[in-house]
Amino acid sequence: MLLTNILGDARQLAITYGIPYHNFKLLLGYVLDCSVVDLRLKYNSLSDFEYEIYQGFVARLIKHEPLQYITGITGFYGLDFRVDPTVLIPRPETEGLVEWVLSYCNGSESVLDIGTGSGAIAITLKKQLLSLDVCATDISADAIATAKKNAASNKCSIDFFNSDLFPDSKDVYDIIVSNPPYISSVDYLTLAPEILEFEPRNALVADDNGLAYYSRILQMAHDYLSPEGMIFFEIGSEQAKPITGFAHQAGFCKVKVKQDLNGFDRYLMITP
Ligand code: GLN
Image 1 (cartoon, rainbow, N blue to C red):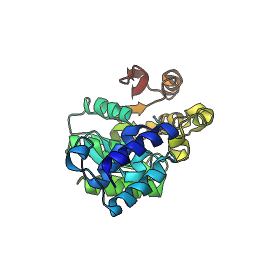
Image 2 (image 1 turned 45 degrees about the vertical axis):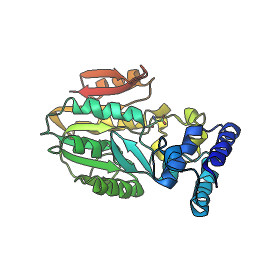
Image 3 (image 1 turned 30 degrees about the horizontal axis):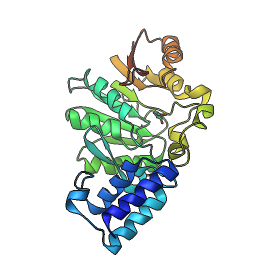
């Protein structure tokens, strides 16, 4: 099958189904194991076998399945992470959270990542600063299994616990970081089909208008935070104010807000 014809069909499908044309090229690149830029340079046709595999992927893409679940892989902070429908696909804005946490680390800290999902935050922190002592939790045993595979493929050692927010042990941490579910059940229904129909709802939606996990974490945090410890959250763009309220109620004095690259309030640092 000629590449020109395949790309022509992809262009039509992209328009018909409202899916970026580039995603079709990324899939072709994935099938042929080459970059999008190299596609036309290296190939002018696909074998029957390659075309069959590509067609199988396209059938999923036009149903709005995220490209990352089709290929089973995504990039985050320069590392590769396997992803499957048991974990949220790591978002680019979460790289900003990792970067902010790193700017406060000297490498001697112990870190707890709550709700680790694919392990993206915990693993990236560890890879950037190998001397950090990193633990991570998730309530989903399936997510923990995926995160463990990601830690292994990225060759780093992290203690994973399948638990609800905090580990069962009574250890204290210098840094607690979390990108918990923060979408309200009402806003959830307005999300794109790629998210709504394919990503795990329990990794996205929280009670109390999306705020439930922040209040639970802050109420418990004193027992798990070292005296000079810091808490870092990714948040919804309208949530800085109510979460600051929870932090003050829980006895934390200082709250710093940081914006993401789009200028939205996206990160909080909370200290005693
Ligand atoms: N930023 C994600 C989204 O908008 C939500 C992540 C989360 O709930 N922690 O899809």
